[in-house]
Image (cartoon, rainbow, N blue to C red; front, top):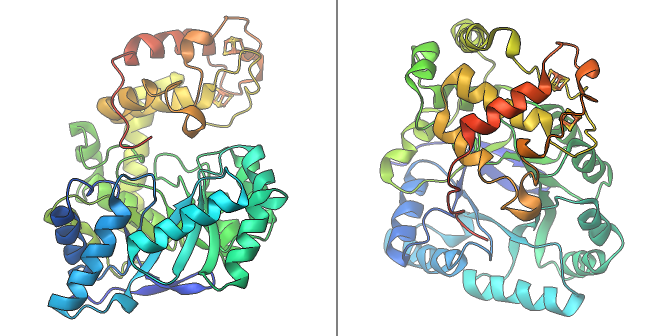
Length: 380
Ligand code: SF4
Ligand code: SF4
C-alpha cells in the first residue's frame, strides 16, 4: 500500500513530500539504492536529493528509477529530483558536469539544482557575478532546470544575503530542535515563497536515532526524533531530509506523512520537559547561544563549541557531541575550523556574556570532555 503523503509547494518547482530521501547513505550498490527508493515510494516520498559528490548515487538513482518504471509501473515523471553543483569552475566545466548529471540520472532536465555548500561569501559572489551567474542564466534559458537553490552550512549573515539576492527559489539549511539559530532564516525564505528543506534533522540534528536514556526519558511518550520532526514541520519547514539506509528508517516518515499541523499541548509540554531537564543538568553553566561573546580575536566559535557541551551534558548525546567536535578543522568550509584549544584565555569575551559564563574555563573543560579520534565523513 502506498502512503498518501501531503505534497507541498517547494519554490516554483513541482510539489514535494513532507520527507525527502537524501541518497548519500544508500550508495553501496545499485541494489541497495533501488530498495531504498522503492521503500521511499511506498512511504509516500516523491522527492530525491542527491549530488555528484555522493559517489555513484546519481548513476544508481537513474538505474533505480528506470527499473521502478519498468517493473513496478512507478512513472519516472512522478519523481522530483534535486541534485547539486559545487560553487567553483568555469562555464564550460560547469556545463560538462551538468551534462554528466543528466546522463547519470538518465533524465532530460533536472527539477531543482542547488549550489552545493554556499558556505563562504566568495561562493555567493561566484553566483551573483561570476561564472556561476552565467551558468545559471544559461540553464534557465535552455529550460534544463525548473529552479535554482542552494544548500549552506554557512553563517547567518551569508544565508541572509543569499535569501535577499532573490536568485534562489529554495534552500537547504541546518534547522534543528536542538539548534534553532537558523529558524528565522527559514521563515524569511518561506515568506518569500521559497522552498525550505531541513538538512539531516536526525543525524546533524543530534544523532537523534541514537538517543541517550536522558533524552528518551525527557521525550516520553514520544521518541526524541519524532518530536524533533514535529517541531520542524509545525514551524512550516517544507520538507525534511531523511538519510535512510534500511526499511525501518521509514517508520516515522510514514507516521508523520501528513503531520504539518501546529504542535499539540502534549508536544509543547514534551519540548518544555526536554529543555527543563537540560537546564537542570547544565545549571548556571548553560550557554544560551545568544552569540554576544563574538567575535573572538582567536576566531574560536564559542557558541558552536558550547552548544556541543550543552548537548553532551544537558541531553546526554555524547557520541554526537564527540563526532562533531572532532570534525572541527577537518571538513574545510563545511564546518568550524578552530576548536577550543585555540582559546588564548585573553578574557575578551567574558564581560560580553550576559550569563557571566567562565567561557575560557568552559572551553577548556569541553576540549577535555570531547577530544577523541575523528570519524570518517560520508563524502569529501
Ligand atoms: S578567552 Fe578565549 S574564547 Fe574568549 S575571546 Fe579570548 S581567546 Fe576567544
Ligand atoms: S555570550 Fe555567553 S551565553 Fe551567549 S553564546 Fe556566548 S557564551 Fe553563550
